[in-house]
View 1: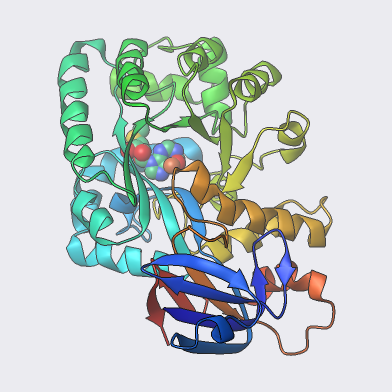
View 2: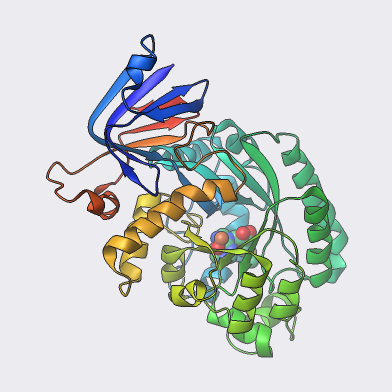
Length: 404
Ligand code: MCF
Ligand code: FE
């Protein structure tokens, strides 16, 4: 048994002082004062001037794109998408084992212990399993050509069942439908039948860009030329609300939703789906800023994610939290910082893992972060954590210590 003693413990809803944390067998055993008196044989780790908080959950990223630095074009969504199509075949293999391991190390060392990883090829599966992180591994289906539907579906099924072999307390095989503009209705329906039967979590890129809005509403806008050029297609394959109805009764992470309209948000709320907000990805691909007021008005749960290195420059949740704080200047900094941190940790549970809060029985997935020495007002800790942390000093993954 090990006892961790720090100046602060973030549960994360509450800031506790004078309280220790006991871990054993990879799990949190107890939280309370003076635990070394109760467990005199336990090893004591003292972290003065530090806070212990749960590891982060980054619910949406694409490990397989981790080789990208400046290959893909940022700034405009369609230009970006064309660059993905042009470079994907070479970019994905460029993320070899060493690259995947580097990406996972970046994720872990920046305090993230739970991820939602979208995979279209499956080449990142073993690295994801080996990472020891809690992984919701979303095998992605993509393709709008009905002629190729059978091949695409069988390839998807193969990847899904390959992932399913690794299922356990730290790994879940899940289903990703790429988006309403890139997945044929019949294909989405079949993949979602599997998700329903297998009771998996589902992920969907939805209403990310203005181009997607215009194309799906009225077969117009910047996607018109794109679909004509690449797929010889003049009409959108789906209408967005009808497509969203396919996700009835499925626990879905709806990613982006920047351009979702009221009826779509109403349906998302009614179905109990949650929204994944990727502020830096949206900014870099020219997609604007998600209006969180419209989510809050409907009590739609949301949290933030980095998206992949295909549309970002780091997989560090502290970087993302800072960006979110500054991209939503209308919310009071102190309460918004707390809200962001609470969601960024507790979402591990939404992804299906016993992690994300400091509770007995949960996995000991923790981060230990240095606190500014001159902190005067304890309640301001959430904001200062976001402002001053690049990486935590130590991360515990299932009770195993990483770092100094
Ligand atoms: O979330 C971002 C932007 N929106 C859509 N797709 C992706 C993102 N990052 C990576 N992707 C992947 C997607 O999963 O790029 C490919 C898919 O494999 C796009 S091909 C239309
Ligand atoms: Fe994405």
